[in-house]
Length: 400
Image (tube, rainbow, N blue to C red; front, top):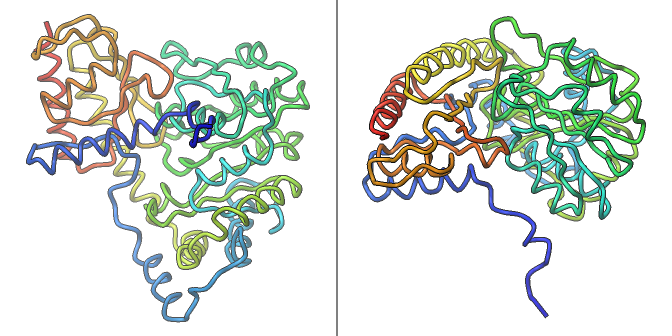
């Protein structure tokens, strides 16, 4: 009898974490490595949020809380949804987890049965398909090509829905492409979903506040109120407030779904860190000026990286609407030979050779379900990005 669960054979470790780990190993060996693989802001958590956490410690707020969040945080989340998204939720419709990933996973575990299908637009965040597989479902990939601006069409969504479809996962602005759906584009998708009442919507809004050039964020339940009852609207404080390590994500949805997610969390991790919860209360209720400051910095960095990568041989880098990633396509590099003598047959080959020869860590497009491409996180200092893009250009020039 095998010791490990069969379900583990269906999934693979996170490629983004693997690249980040490999880059750290090379740095430890003394290599000059620039890591552009991790998806986290390089700014410090704002001072008022850090002060709130210290105050919580001093006040002794260090004990267990309710499994899925303190009342004060749930109310702050309700207020946020009402204030920023025009969505009305009650505290019993809110789940708080240890990061956005936990809330997504809890929802999938709570709802998926063997054979259930989950529609996932590609390119996708690397964890979506594997979380579906771990929960016993089948990921169905719908490709939003570069020619389509990394967005799927209503016709593609319609064609992908079957009687076994349980969830549609939606992410805008997107990790990894930074592509966002306008209100009109999203309304076209929600019109399709209205015709299929058995399909629920999981909207991952983690990059809501990182949007550029006047792009107006919108979320499915806001665009189409008739979908409110079967939409799980997910978000968190990680990206908007530079709080990745604090591990606070949240979701709002139907009472029965939230109760099922609470049951799973109560028997797995129980509550998120109490101190992080109080810090998140301050993040949502306190001053919001950090958001505009960081957004301006990210837009400046985006423009820098897009300009420099588009000057590289064999690379085309679309301009993203938001998040802090670019997703350049590299059709012009595939088939060429790297300085090591390796023929670049895939985007994974490209990323591996780039790291080995120039010390720049990026994530290959195959990890996100759409090749040939790679993802760059431009959540790094401007001079670091200039040096990284200079090295990428030098690598591309050396290809034969």
